[in-house]
Image 1 (cartoon, rainbow, N blue to C red):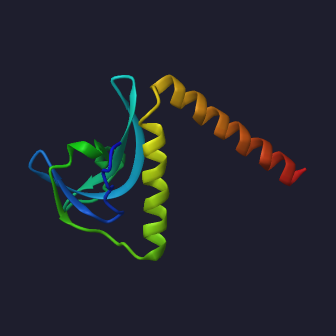
Image 2: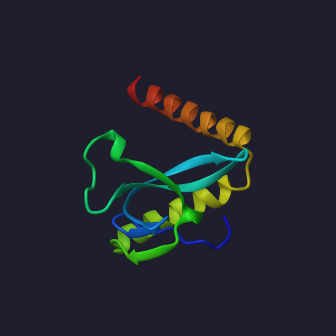
Length: 116
């Protein structure tokens, strides 16, 4: 991911002539590469059931209709998410899965030490 800035939670974005609200982020595999994606719900319906959720690649957003919350905490979180995606975008999907598994294993080990 080059210098792309992700939109914050609560942002309203347009893709394929439809409007969506950003409710989260997800790393997705496309052409054996990891790309940043948004988890979104359609406007004005929002979340009705699991089928309401959509995943849109960040580079497929055509227009930012309205910016979501960007207070100090949000800006720190956005920086960490953007940095994570900068690292992920340089990895193949297989490399990313190995890195992710290592991270999960480290968390489990830390939890065991904390609980034990």
